[in-house]
Structures are given as C-alpha cells and as structure tokens.
Image (cartoon, rainbow, N blue to C red; front, side, top):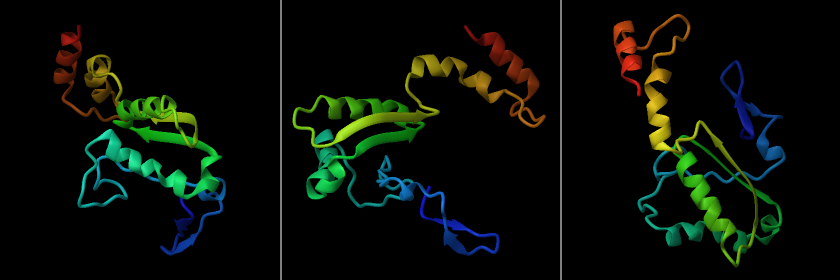
Length: 142
C-alpha cells in the first residue's frame, strides 16, 4: 500500500507497487487512536468531521480528482452514511466516485444470525470451539 516495504534483511526498501504511485491516500481512522491516528480530541459530530473535508478547499488540485472511500468492519456501517452526506451536500467541492467496504459490519440483525456458523468453520483441520458446542449452536439457529 505505502511507498516502502521491508526487505528480507529487515531494511526499508522502495515499494514499486505502492498505491502512492497512482493515487493520493488519506487515512482516517475511526475511532481516533486506532490504526495510524492519534489525538487528544475525539470527533463527536458530523459538523466536526466535516472540517476534515476542508482539506479540498486548501488543496484545490486534489478536488478535481476521483475520491474513493474505503473501509472494513464497522466501515460497513459508517461509510454509506458518510457517502450519503457527501452526495447530498449542495456545495460539494470534490468528486466522490466509489465506496468500497470489505468484510463490512452493516446489518446486525442479518449478520448476527450467521456469526456463530462462521466461528465454527474448520480452518486447517482445527475447530475453533468444541464440536458439541458447535452442534448445539447450529441446532439453536432459527
């Protein structure tokens, strides 16, 4: 993803396949203090989060490029909401063209009913839980 990789002798080396060669990446971690982010103040409202988008007013050259949102896990919940806010904003100053969600946590009622089955799948001949517990969980499914 980034401009550097680690070589076999544990030294940083240039990554010729970096996404940075073809795109500008902005990482926004949520909640604050996970991933690459750190802060003493947490964003607690859509208005406060909107200040991050002012980036495009300061750096006009990026506003005309395609803008993609991507995330995983709980991003399946908040990315569609953010995209909707962006697309419905009358004074949008950039071009949102794509939303990508991997392994998204989007619909609790639907996803939870399959969560137990996911946990009992064998991987490399190992069962995560005791087989009797797995069978009881499967039998209890609606």
